[in-house]
Each structure stands twice: as structure tokens, then as C-alpha cells.
Amino acid sequence: MVGEDRFDPRLRLDLSSGKGSLRGLTDSIDHLNKSENIRMLPPRPPYVDPDAPPGVDYERAIGLVHGRHTQDMHDRHAAMLHKICQQNAGGVHTHIDSTHTAHQLYSHCTPPSYYAPYMPPLLPPPLPPLPGFFVHDLGSIETLLTCAARHREPIYNAAICDVLRTLSLPLNKQRSYDEMHYEDDFAALVRAVSSLLRSDVPAVSLAAAEMLLALVAAAG
Image (cartoon, rainbow, N blue to C red; front, side):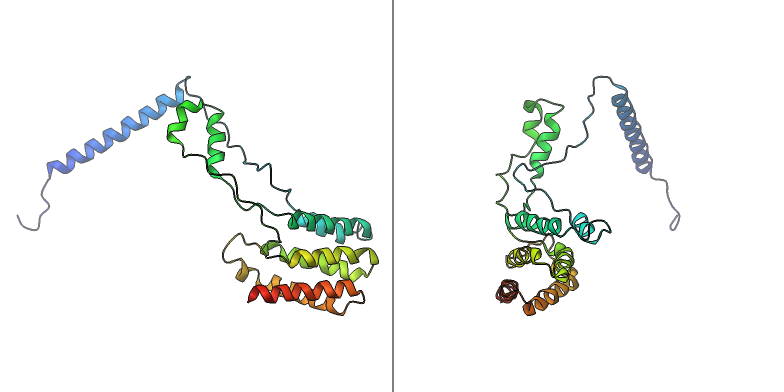
């Protein structure tokens, strides 16, 4: 009759087939888990670029200048700033090749002749490092630069100039929206550098002016 649901034998057949397939798949998985011939994959090893410079621990650096027992160790503060600038001016690697990680992972448990046909070819070596600070680190740089300028100790002058010269290099971004996300940190850094234009040390004021001019030139 019209309006009543009629029994469709094909629907019952499809449901029965689906349950049978799911039951068979579950049984197969249980059998594989109990098999002694299955070698479990080891944990994924982290990909370490041997040519990449060591990362900068900004939290530790800020803790050094603000610490109760280390805030007066001006020579260590200046050496730390020089080291940070050296690491960033020398370049930072922004390219990680996931295919190298995959090849490293599977080479631990199976011979290359087995997994090679199923793996993508190794990509060319990573891109050359890009010098300069990251945009997301500008807040930490501003904190360290302000602390160094506040002390007004001669030992900081060369370190401050080093930071300003590194800031003159193009900034690097990890994400396309970093400029908007860290806009407040960038503005605070510009204010801190602008205050150094009135420094009593000619080298510091000149380095601050060159940094701001480089910033204007990059903005177009």
C-alpha cells in the first residue's frame, strides 16, 4: 500500500554483509596483535639537522638578567647577548624534511629494500639558513635590550650595538600571520630602539638610527 514502508531484502543483505566484514576485520586485527612475527615500530625519532645552530633559550636569558642572584652579573649578561646575536646572525634553519624522518623511522625496523618502493624519494638538502631574528622572539629581544640599556654600564655598549645590527637584518616568520599576532611586541621594540637614539654613547645612537632606517627601508 502507498505510504507504508515495504521490506527491502537488499537492505537486509547489505546490513548482514557489513556486519560480517567488520567482524572479519576485527578478528584479523586481533590475530595480528597476538602474532609473534610482527615487529612493532619503534617510537618516531626526532629529526635533528646537524647543520642547524643551537636554539636560543630566551626564557633562560631573561631569567639570568632578572634573577635575584644573577641580575648584577653584567659580564655574563653582555656575553649572553653576544651569543644570541651570533646564533641569529649566523642563520636559522626553517626547513624540516619529513621524508628524512620517515626513512629514519622505517630503517630501524625493516630493510630498505622492503619499504623503499612505498616511500617518497628523499628531497634535496635543506635550504640555506636565513639570518635574522624571528618575529615571535621580538618580545624577548625587547626585554633583553631594555634591561641592558637600563643598566648604563659600559660593558653593555658593544652588546647593544650587536643586537641592533642583528635587528637590522630581515626578520623571519614561522607563520604568515606573525606580523599581526606580534604587532604589540614589534611596537614595543621600536619604542625601545627609538629611546636609544638619545644615548650618550655615539656608537649606540648610530646603531639605533641604522636599525630604524633598515626597518623603514624594508617596509618600503
